[in-house]
Length: 121
Image (cartoon, rainbow, N blue to C red):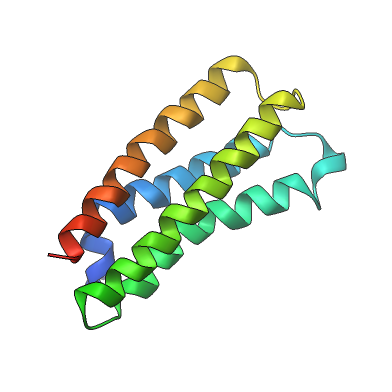
């Protein structure tokens, strides 16, 4: 059975953000159980927030309104990067996973900035 895609599902930025959230869910599954209700929950919530804000913004009419939600998604990405830094410094992430996550975040940051610029034109 096929379904009609919503407009946000067609956005490359949303697809990358969704994949980033999935990646971070997998990454945090390696964290110690003591962080289950603290850093893991916070990191996952922020990661899921990025594509969620893009989806919410896609329902807005004007480019300015859409750009507002893209800005929120960008801010949420920065929150996620902060939590990744802390996770690495706490010793929950090895160097390879940390730098892979940062590279993915950097690419997503670029896409979000490009999308926001396009929405404001």
